[in-house]
Image 1 (spheres, rainbow, N blue to C red):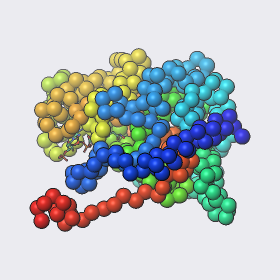
Image 2 (image 1 turned 135 degrees about the horizontal axis):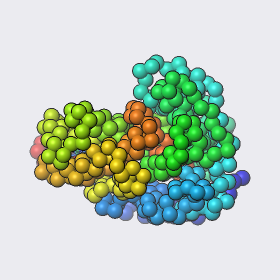
Image 3 (image 1 turned 45 degrees about the vertical axis):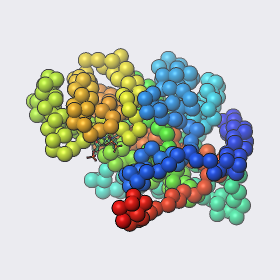
Length: 435
Ligand code: HAX
């Protein structure tokens, strides 16, 4: 038994009576009301989910287990000589709410190393997919192909399934998946974009270090990977990828089915794919400018042309946030330190100076400020990763950390199968008093 699993068990035992009490004794207390617009328009703002892993304040941004991004980065143990924490220690933190010691974080690193090896059939499957397959489809399919490994599904089929213990099997599946998906991502990248010159895993490295190694990119890309995976991990549980993963797991589907479904949602251009869209949009501007960095006035024209042609400005706006995304801010800080003179960073910086005012004048977007996706591709580009079709896969590796922590807790607390109620348009017209 690992120290992490022991700690998690203690936390779960302390938490369970709180959940039981709220449901049993206070289950009828109202937490809000639902309007017609909410019922018809994406349930925006409906308070219908519970998670303790992260909380998204519209003006402050994300807090992981109560800590802001800078506080999280500061508090967690780091590999020697590195600026960013072990992703494995962050996993410990998201699961338990406790900052691990250096030794505890390194024990998780060792556990991940032991589980890292991929079944050969995953590599064969990836190799046999048609050349035009999007890297996100490859990623989701590779994960789904490993469903047969699920310890949760085996436990369910064993005839001994207990709702009290099933979190342990979800935890095991989650840990297996997290240990393996950075390698899957790197295999996809090298197969698709580096003439299939794959690089075998290094079983002595931590998650960020091994990802950089298998991608074939030198330091400080290992720190870029650690930062990237951590900031993309969780954003409350109502966003498309987190909610989908939670929803599918609520049917007692295992982590392979659930995360694969969540990744399919992340692949949408209004969600995770926006980081690819940002780069593609900026490249379009760059081509039209013949490579020259546009002036503010020229950039304003590109932004208005995009809006006037009925398209959104990728990387701007958010369903919940109402200020600059702190995940954007933390990546901007990285850029200012490591690549202040990078040409693409200059493009993105000019965008930051012009887009919010234009979106305010345009008058539609409730949040004119940039989100995480406006900045992340620039860093990848700087370190030589120019194939922006691949960016959402890395987002998916990060997102897996948050959603897998969530579904482990979902099973520990016995959250029910999801089943909101639908109404017909007729019924809503009657409720509105127009019929
Ligand atoms: N550019 C132009 N118009 C925008 C806009 C943007 N960046 N953001 C919102 N709007 C428009 C909406 O399309 C909507 O228009 P209609 O009334 O004509 O439908 C209107 O403003 C109101 O939208 P909203 O309430 O402010 O935003 P939503 O909650 O409906 O949508 C989105 C939130 C993130 C999907 C939206 O802001 C958007 O499309 N942004 C661009 C794509 C993007 O960056 N997505 C990534 C978001 C972060 C994330 O999930 N990452 O994974």
